[in-house]
Image (tube, rainbow, N blue to C red; front, side, top):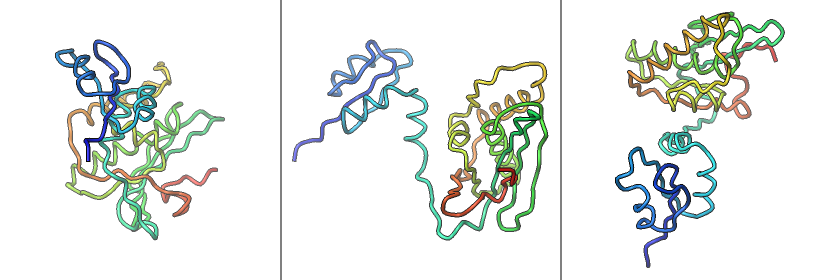
Length: 205
């Protein structure tokens, strides 16, 4: 049986595009500073990937397979955030899953977004667990926040302003921690459709 053909997406190289052989890809990336490329089983998959940022595609590929539990998981920590659009206030918290005990609660902070709150809640929970040498999993129902943690960056488009100084100080601290520390805690999606509301939910829907 012949070797399966691979297709290569090149984000940064001598020429950007999809190439149908390693030799063609290699000609674009070999010796090119900061080359970004990846192999795929089909041309369609390579073309779809090329429409997205390289780091996002890389993070998805490197992320370990998500664990799925049935019934709902009973160990670990859950995080959630709530943004009050009327008052422009953000809160987030961490809850110990077995006991349903609130571990910490931050806010209200001036302005923000749910995804920022979830990102900060995940990172601040990881800070706590690493300090305790606790390998427990962390659950969030925000796909975006989980991706940001994987990328080690809060990719909000919210502009930094003086009234948001406290919020952005926390964001910078979280990003710096991610870039200078390692952790082994599984980061998992809380499957609301299967398990019901996240135990850290603020109940304001």
